[in-house]
Image (cartoon, rainbow, N blue to C red; front, side):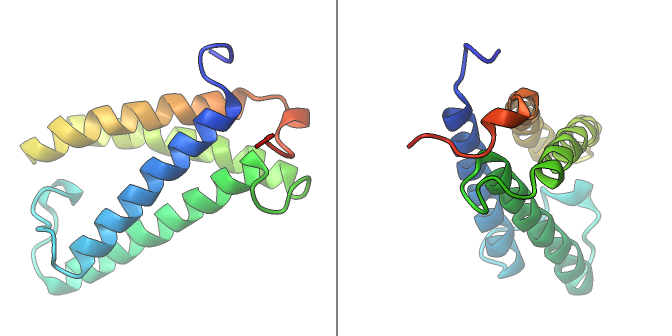
Amino acid sequence: MKNFISLKMTSNLLLVINGFMLLLHILILLKIVPYDFIWGGQINNTADLYRLESISILIQCGFIFIISLRAGYIFPGKLKKTANVGVWIIFIFMILNTIVNITSSSGIESLVMTPLTIILAILTFRLALEKEGHNTTISH
């Protein structure tokens, strides 16, 4: 898999996709985008919307931070163990999220988010496989 996609490309794709997901959650929180296709239809009122979307935004920011850290875009050469553990946690989260999306009662969530979380899981796995010595800085 390492020869198929470079570390730099993997990191950049993960950051772009997670950036778009962060934007989507912000737009949902602002009620610009409808929320009926997310969270498996669990959002029943405005309080649920704010609570669940705030959690989503925090998670997305955490993912972006960990991926940036692992790629060496921020704090190059520092917090290596944190970044390594964080990427594996994101990978496990993506696997679990894929399972939840497959079983979602929302057809749009299943149809759109399942392939996206599979792609994110594969890319995160690729990033997690990179040897520790290679994660300090990505050549630009």
